[in-house]
Length: 299
View 1 (spheres, one colour):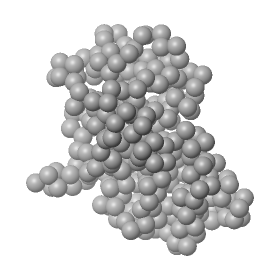
View 2 (tube, one colour):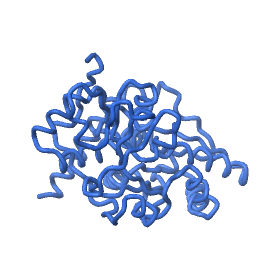
View 3 (cartoon, rainbow, N blue to C red):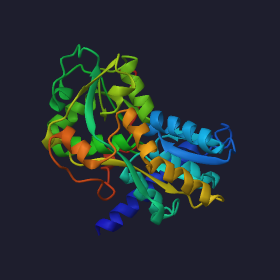
View 4 (spheres, one colour):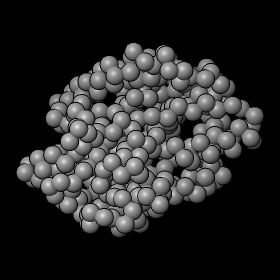
């Protein structure tokens, strides 16, 4: 029964994503047709860009990078039947990619580990100290749209676990934007259009002059996320794709991700959290009321 719910949710999720991008995917010039085309989650952007540059310099192989929300990327790959590699920003979207036949499951490799956190404007002018502070009247909060963004899925799971129905209602009143991707979510905070977000800890290192990290309580973190990479079923150059994945997993590749403050082992993440947590897990079924929420920036 639970597997049936997961499959139905996955179908709904893909239909939602396809409807949002079907009219634009072929007119935006996203695909540059280089030697290697990679679809990567926006949560992985800074180190992936550098890894691609180093790989190009070492091999002469041109790499085209397409960043976005994990779910949106899956639909782009399905609709265009393009892509050599899918670099999923979460286990949830890698599972969805496998369910939809987008990647070869046996090629999946875990690369980095991501921890959810509260993030606020530098200096914390609203004095936000805990998750429950996000229910205070008058705060402006953003999360990622859970229909397409991995951190949105994690945020909803955290809220559903930690808040009473009354607290959840108060929190939702404060949400002024459901961002389409990780970079848009962090930009909301950098541009001071919101007071706080539930995002990945790593956002604090993307813009340390404007963003401050507030760790969640250990009890509030449901699970540890990981970014996984796999070869696309649409590839016509599987050897090149494998070569890039091997580079990312090499000591040199991992050093690039550590340079940008990403955890490359579960133990590094556990140490930051303060205890061990489940890693990945089955596809989380987001409650229906969180799917396709309206933008409410006119508040």
